[in-house]
Image (cartoon, rainbow, N blue to C red; front, top):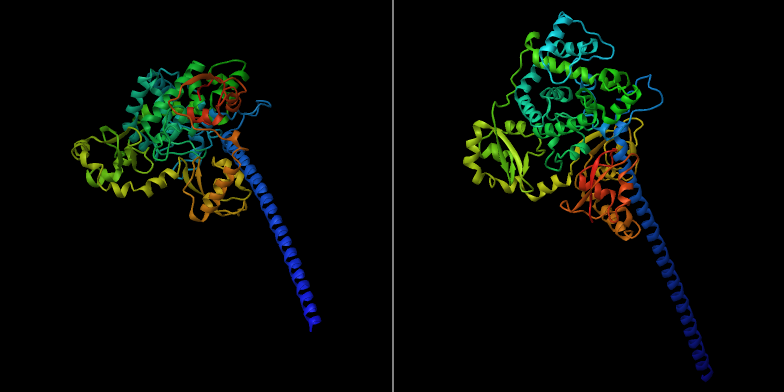
Length: 559
């Protein structure tokens, strides 16, 4: 019995030892498993951080590339070098991007159904009007700008005065309202009034015109140059669409060009192809500085720009002799201007003060969402003169009318989140990839994927994509908010690694130093000379893109 107890005790001790051993081994395995999992998680985090870092760098490179090259890609099929020019190519600088519609008369005409379709390089028009009459009429115009006459100019005179029966009556009707405004602006700048005819070439006096390269407004400014010449572009306002503001910017642009060339015909040509290409044409011609001497060396569309200017100006003067009658456009004969310092919706004007919505919209096309954001800064509102008293009578209570509905936080946030880009629907074509689409529309691949909830870079022909050209895009949808949050977290975890790629905001009122850009310099090279200043700081402070040219003066903020 005692033996059995001893055996039982020994067995119990053995079992206890075995259990302890088993438990110890299990604990060890658990610890090893836990340790391996921890190591794997750490390794995964390092890889994820590295991936996010590479994504950030790739996105930055894409944005920089888009800023410098998108115009060249867009215009590659538009501009052609004359065949006799040799190996040099067109200089696709910021000025070319601001060619402001690339000779509308040769490009827009072949894309609009209601416009005649002519190849102005090959067509030769005939008219019953003798050359002597054209010459006499041009001489009587007594233009401050030299107006040439030859077969090429004659072709454009006939085009505007005889071949555009549907369009010129409307243009002349619009001219009755807009041309006095333009004349006053050019007079104020001490420039020839005749320059007003350029708006006809650029947009046919359509204040909301847009080119395929992204130039907007009656004077067809691209984003970068519009900002450089003082036009406001944000979520609520695009002053490129303001005929008055954009004409003032065009006047400053042309005045700068005239100071470079000392000749109005060359200044007009540079408005189309940029001063760089005009200078190149001068150099290739052996230093000649007359338009017709450098004509063969200019880009193809620019060669037709000055003749088109003469044709448009002639028709505006002698339209009656050609049987053209201006068509009434409904624009008011007189307009009153008010300074707005509060948020104001066009529907408040129409519903409460009785001012027709369409007339307010036509006179103020620069307000993108029918909202004057007067709480941000003072803006101008134009209304027909006959409604001035209605506005004054209701002004005290006008701003509060349905304000909660028109300016609710959700609506305002949605507008602000849209940035200053224009929302378009893009249909994928054969050969398209996201990178190519991003370059053309001045955005990044990651933005396109975010706007369309794409999980990969794969797209298919015929697929429709929502894009916000040149802007920050729409609010991130709920389905993508988690991934965005993760990206933000990852970006935060790698902030030490990517520190050089970011820059802190600069106060717009900060002190600054003027700097003149030299040949071959970029904003990134310039920024390196000023500790604490980044290229982005310089762009933001001056309201410009990365496209800069030698001789341009910029402000270097003191940080």
